[in-house]
Image (tube, rainbow, N blue to C red):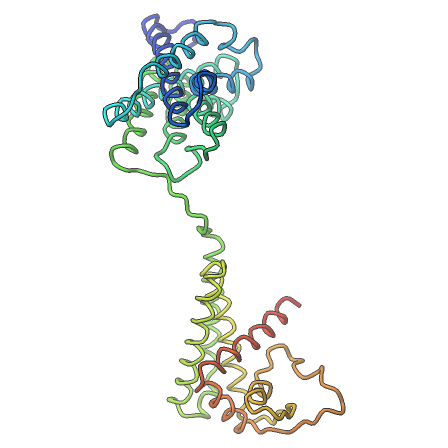
Length: 370
């Protein structure tokens, strides 16, 4: 159905709803100006942005003729009238909050439909038509929030505003496709209003989760599972030592890595990434410990007992741990059995274990980054 062929009753209803919405949004804008402590100039500007901002954005983007708010003087008059009403009458309390919310829901639903229809009138594609409906419904509140130095409410963590407008625009577009535009202009706003009020009365909110990244989380989980599968194939070295001793070492390292994970999360690292890195490190650490059984390892000698234990541990994740020692530095040979005993001494001390994990993780990260 062409807009020119629209039922006069529906067209009249939209016209009166449009101008009434401008007045109501002018009052709401003026009320916000009062809450922010603005003078009468602030009342006029905030009321204008609230009542006409969305339509102005729509008309400027469509770029076909003069902006409606400028070519039809009643729009500015109604917006300024709303500012004056809010200046002379102090609207507050629960009754006003309910009235404001319901009025805003009704006006936004109607404006989403009118914005979509106007875009259809000028032959815009589907996605721009939806955008024009959304901008008409929410653009004024976005401009108002930015001017009053607030984060726009439509950006998340609040009751939905954009989703109802999108739903309305889609319904209007579908109705137009089946030559039932008049029906779409009735049904679309109803759906939008119901969704908006659902957010108000049922507490529905659009979730804002900055850490949510399913692709990254899935990749981390796949990496962990792959390492677990690889671990099942390593059984030869585990038969060399008693099961309880290997289990004790594993638990000591897990405890140290858990402390490191919590420290990294507090420092701002994503938990899934920290857990994945720790899991990969632990797998490689266990493999290196198992390989100690039949090895003789060359390590630097040192006078400091604790430092010697830490520097002498043979879990060389990077493969070049001792390449930086000079020819004149004293070294000694340590058998695989002695090496494991040194490791057990370290793992029995929480502080030494944390220091060991810190050093080995640095080598591990250097190896992977290289």
